Amino acid sequence: MCGIVGAIAQRDVSDILLEGLRRLEYRGYDSAGIAVVYNNEIQRIRSLGKVNELVKAVGEKTLAGGLGIAHTRWATHGKPSVNNAHPHVAGPLAIVHNGIIENYIDIKNRLIEKGHQFTSETDTEVFVALVNSYLEQEGNLLNATKRAIKDVKGAYGTVVIDKNEPEHLVAARSGSPIVIGLGIGENFVASDPVALFPITHRFIYLEEGDIADVSRFKIVIYDKNGNVVNRAVNEVNIENDEAVKGEYRHFMQKEIYEQTKVVTDTLAGRISDEHFVVECFGTNARDVFSSIERVKIVACGTSYHAGLMAREWFESLAGIPTDVEIASEFRYRKSITQKNTLFVTLSQSGETADTLAAVRIAKQKGYAHTLCICNVPGSSLVRESELVFLTRAGREICVASTKAFTTQLVSLLLLVGSIGVVKGTISSEDESGYVASLRKLAPSIEKALALDSKVEEISREFVNKRNALFLGRGAMYPIAMEGALKLKEISYIHAEAYAAGELKHGPIALIDADMPVIVVAPNNDLLAKLRSNIEEVSARRGILYVFGTPKLGLTKDPNIRFTEIDEVDELIAPIVYNVILQLLAYYVAIIKGTDVDKPRNLAKSVTVE
Ligand code: G6P
Image 1 (tube, protein in one colour):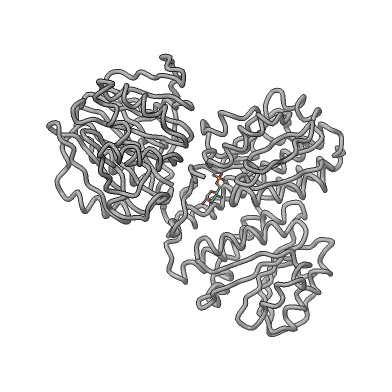
Image 2: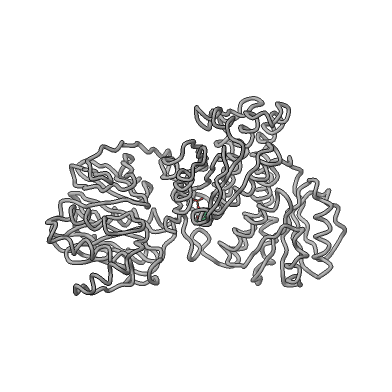
C-alpha cells in the first residue's frame, strides 16, 4: 500500500527519494510523485503507473534541492490519476500521506466556504489545505501541523514541507507507520525502513500520536500530549539485500524456493531434542499458557488462513477450544469476550490496520493475554502485543504471501505444541512425535519443490480458464482456501474453495467440462470420503487435478489428472501440499501473463481499513 520517503540534506535528495520509492514498490500502488524544494520553490512531478514512469517524467536531470518528499499512492479516495497522486500542495506546503482522513468531507466543506479551491478528489489534499489554513495564525509549519492534527479523525502517517522553511520537515504518525532514518548531517523519513537501507541502518520508530520536527542536525519528537520525548535509536541490520531476485524470474518464485531455508530458520532454537522450547514465546509464556483455557485468533487474508489451520491443530492436538475471525469483522462486531482467553494475531507485516485495531480492541475488551506471530521485528503489532513470536521468513517482496504463510504455520505448530505441553494436554510421547515431524518439514518441502516441472505442465491447461474450484477436507480445507486465494490474487482466475463434503450442497451445480477442480488429498482418515467427492465431480464431466497419496486408490479415469505426492507425516502435510498449490498459482499466472509480483489492485501491507 502507499509508501512515503522524505529527506533533509545538504546534497540533492531526489535520487535518494526515487530509489526509496523503488524499494517500496513491492507494497502495491498505482501512481507516484515527488516534490523537492529549491530556491524557495516547490518542484513537483507526479505520474500514473509505476515508479519508472515517474523517473522518466523527472528525466535525465536530477531535481536540485536538499529538502524533499515522495510517495507511491494506492487509491482510496479518488481514482488513480495524476491529479490525485501525492504530493499534494496548498499555499507554500507540500504533503505526502498514508492512511485515511475520515472526516475530510466536513473539513473540505469548511475550507471551500473560506474560498479554498481543491484540485483533487483526495482526503490528503484536504489535510494539507487544513495545515495551510492554520499557517498564518500559528506562525510556522510545526505549530500549524500540530493544530491541524487535532481536527482530523482517522489514520495518518504523513510528512509536510514548507518552501519558506527549507531547513526542516515535519512528520507525524497515527495509525500508519513512520520511521526516521538517521544520517550524518542529514536525516530521512519513510513509511518502512526498507526504503532507506542504502543510506542508513539507524532508525527511530515514531509511536502513535508522535510528531517529529526533523532538520539536518536535530530531531525533536513530541508525543500525543505535546511533551518532548526521547525515542530509542534502533540498528536494523540486513545481512544482504533481499530486494534482489538473483537467479529467479520473479520474487514469488524466489520466495517459494526459500521455504526450506526459512522453515529451518524459524525452527532454530525453538525445538530441542524431543521438546518444544516454550520460553521462545517469552519469559512469562509458561505462566500465560498455563492460565489460559481457550484461544481466539484474528487476522486478514493469507494470515487468516493460517488462523483457520491453527484452529484444526489447537482443537485436535491440544484440546484447546479455538475460534478464528477476520480482523475487519471482529473490530466492529459486538462479540463476547470469554474469560481466560489468549488473543492471538497473525500478520506478516505487523502493520495491517484491521489486525492492529483488533489487538487494541481486544485489550479494551479484557482478553486475558495478547500474542502476535509476525514477520517484521519492530512493527506496530509487535510493539503492541504482550507476547511476541517472530517468524523468520526474511523480507517477503511478492505481494502474494508464500514463505511468510509457511513460517506462520510452523510457528503455530510450535504454539499449539507449547500450550499443549504446558497444560498437559499433549503427552511427552506425542510431543516427541510432533517435534520429529517438524524436523522432516524442510526435506519434505524440498521434495514438493522437485515437482516444479510437473506442476508447470499442468498449469498450461489453465490458459483459457476463468474459474476454478479447490477442494479439501479437515486440515486440508484451509489449504484449499489458501490455494484458491493464491490463484485469484496473481492469475485473476476466479477461484473458490469448498470443504469437499459441502460440494453437493450447491457448488456441484457449477461442475462441467470447463470447471477445473483442484483437490488436495494426503493420506488421512478422510481419504475414503474424499474419494467419493472426487467421483461425484468426475461423474459430471468435471476435470480434476488431484494432488495426493497413491493410497487414494483412484481408478483410471480420463477426467482425472493425478499427481502423486510422496508420503508425508499427517501433521505437516498441509504445509507441504500448500507449496504445490503455490507453484500451481505461480505457473498459471505466468501463462496468463500477469504481473506476478505486483498483481493489480493489491497491496502488500494494507495500512488502511
Ligand atoms: C494484504 C496482502 C495479503 C495479506 C494480507 C494480510 O491483503 O496482499 O497477502 O495476507 O494483507 O497481511 P498481513 O501482513 O497482516 O499478514
